[in-house]
Amino acid sequence: MLLGMDDAQQADLRLALKDVANVVRSKTPAEQIADEYRSLNPGAAIVAVRSDTPARFGIIHNISAAGGIVIVVSETKDPELILRSMRAGAREFVLESDHEELRLAVRTHAKVTFGAGELGQVVTIFGAKGGVGATAIATNLAGAMQRRSLRVCLVDLDLYLGDVLAFLDIPGSYSITDVLANMSRLDRDLLASSVTKHRSGINVLAQSSKVEEAEQIKGPDVAALLEFLRRNYDFVIVDGVRGFDEISLAALDGSQHVFMTLTQDVPAVRNGQRCLELFGRLQYDQGRVKLLLNRYLKASKISIEVVSETLGQPLTHTISNDFLVLIDAINRGLLLTEIAPRAKITQDIEGLIPHLLPERAPRLRRQSLLGTLFGKKVVDGTT
Image (tube, rainbow, N blue to C red; front, top):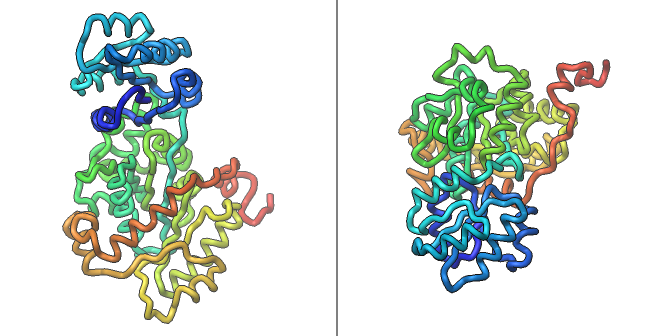
C-alpha cells in the first residue's frame, strides 16, 4: 500500500516494485487508514514523509498499532525524519531514489500475502477436437494479457508432446514436476525466477525437459498446481487439455473459464455437442463454458447460426481465419502482436480479454469433478 505520495512518486515506486509486489495506492483520510489497512491486509505500507508533512507520522503510528509493517521513503536521509519515523513504529527508512534498497526492504520486511487475497483465474483453452488451434489461441491470449501488465503463467498440460515451448521458441527448463516437488518452499520471487520466461514477460511452465517424469503427475497434483499458481498470477492460461482423462478433468475442475474451441466443420461441431452434454452431466456452473469459433469464415455453409443452433448455446466469440500470418508467427516463434499487431486475427484474440476481466466468474461447485467421475458417483448418476 502506497501512502502520502503524489502521482509522480507513486508511478516511480510502482515501476520500481513491479517484479516484487502487487501495489495499491490509498487516498483514504488519515483517520481511516488503520481500518483500510486491516481490510486490505497488505504485506506492508510504504509511507512518504517530508519535514513539512508531520501528519504522516500519525499514519505510521496508526498502521503500526494495527499490527502493520511500515517502510518509510523520503527525498533525503534527514536524521530527525529517521528518528521520528522509527519512534512512530516504522521498520525501515529508505531514500525514494534508491530502488534497489527499497526492493530489499520490501523483501526483508513485508509479509507474504499472495495466498490471503483474491486468487487469480484459471482459463483453459479446450479443443473440441484436435487441430482446432487451441495452442495458438492460448499462447497469443497470454501475450495479449501480458501487454496489459497482468501477471500471466502459461501452462502446457500436454505432458508428452506439448507445443507451447515450440510456438514461443523457448527452451524448457524448470518443469511441472519441479514445481510440484518444491511448492512448499517456493515464494513468488523464487517461482518467477525458476519458470521459463518468454521475452514478452509471459511465464511458461511445461514438462518438455523431463518427459520421463510425466507418469508421476496425477489429477490431484494438477489441481494443487493450479491452486498454487492462482496465488501467484492474475491469470493462468492452460493449454494441452485433451478429452476427459484424469489430468484434463483436474484442469477443467480447477478452471474459472473454459473456452471450448471449435471450427466450422462437422466433426468439430459434433464433438462440441458431446462435450457440452458431458459438461452438463458433470454439473458445471452455467456460463462457465464459453464457445469460441476459431478460423471463422463468413462464407462457410456451417454458419454461426447453424453452430449455435446445433449446440443449443450462443457463441461467445469468433477468431478470424488468417493462416498465412499465423503460420509465419508459429514458424518464427513469435507472438502475433510482434509481427502483425493490427491484423484481424490479432485483434480477435485480444478481444477475448473483456470476457475475462469485467468480473470474477462464480466459484466452481465444491464437489470435485474428479470425484464425480472416479468416485462413487458416476456420470449417469448411478452408484
